[in-house]
Length: 165
Image (cartoon, rainbow, N blue to C red; front, side):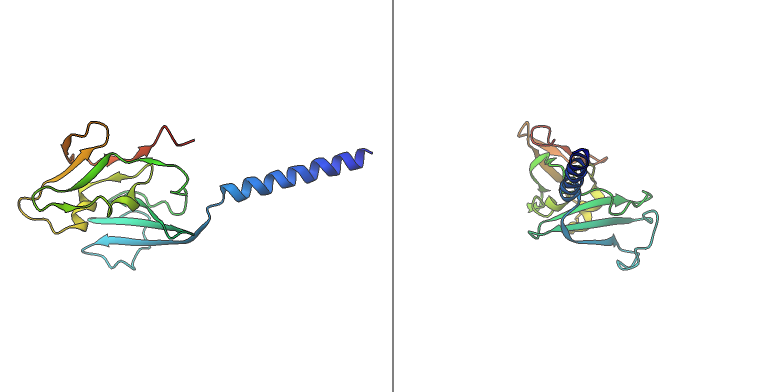
C-alpha cells in the first residue's frame, strides 16, 4: 500500500519537474552572436568585455522566426545565453522613432532590440542610419504622445507591468 503511494508521489514529482523544465527551457531555434563595429571583424567575437566603439549583440530567433536581441555596449561584460528575451513582454516607450530631418523611420528596425533590460543608445541608432550634420533623433512618447528628443543617456527598456508576470 505504502509503496504504491510513494511510487505515485515520485511519478507526480517527476511529471511536475518535466512540465516545469519544458516551460522554462527557451524554445529557440538559434542563438547567434555578432559585433557591430567599424574597427573589429564581426566574426571576431571572443571577448569577455565589449571592445572600444563596439556593440555586442546576442540574437535569439524563436520557432516562428521572430528575433530578439540582448545588447552589450563598450566596456560592458558580455553575458551569453543567460536570459530568454522572449520570456518577458517589454514596454515599448515610443510609437515612432527616427530622424526628424530626413524622416527615416527606425521603429521597426529597433523592434528586435525591445528586450527587458536593454538600453537603446545613440551608438546603436547611428549604426542603423547614415547620420548627417543635422540628424535629429526623435520619438513620439507612447504615454504622452509628445515628440521627445532622444536622450544622450539612451532609453532603458522595462517590463510591461500590465502583461508581464
